[in-house]
Length: 300
Image (tube, rainbow, N blue to C red; front, side):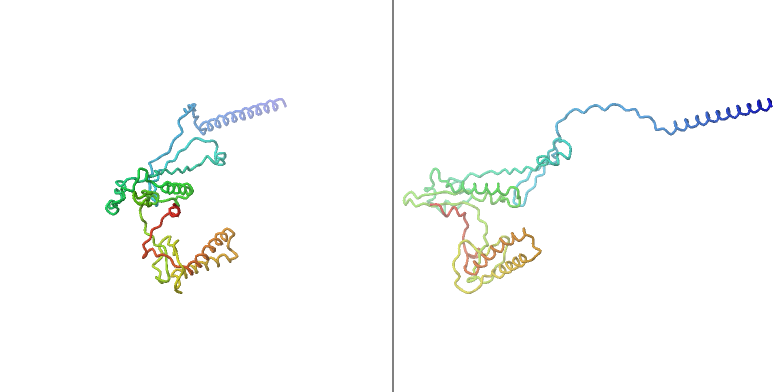
């Protein structure tokens, strides 16, 4: 019995020893695998703090273009550091386009020599003009004209397509108020570029239209009652435009905003139809006439 117990204890110790040996070997193999699979340790070095610099100005190349109205355009883009995007998005002044129009107001011609630079034949055609020019001959109408031009620029600055063209801003050289030294009769002299005016129509003299260029108007400020029953050549077209506007206004699908615009357009077209039926006008293609600002005709 003692031998059996001793033999059993020996076997038990041997089994325990074998189990411990197997556990040690397995642990050693596992550590070896972990060391091979672990990523290499990356040593980190502290990043130096950036030194504050001036906010960058992004200019690129100077984009110098010309709008269709002759305005020279210079454009740049400037950026400055801001806060977080959500805050900046809600700030009106974080994303701005500044429009600044620079225009040189021209000086009026005052002497016969200055007039002759633009119109060389003036001294020959008007030999007595030099004697009528005083020391300060410029009419206040010249300043009023350019004040009106500047006011139009300010009103239409956000609409680049409505700004005066370069030609139309610089189209007047001078406005002189003159007085004859003997008769003391007064005269107003305008020196300005002339644009071709194709407006106007007259069913009595020209029953067939000559075409309608851009911005054409079939009537002029100067008019007189019709003398015949011949219709104005542009009456039918104006009536068709009026009918289309009235039909669109009557649609249930027309929005209130569109109806408001149509209401104004219909009133304007009805007035034009009535005017074309009742009056005759100058014809730009055949009648020699010039167009001047209305303020020029009311001065004394």
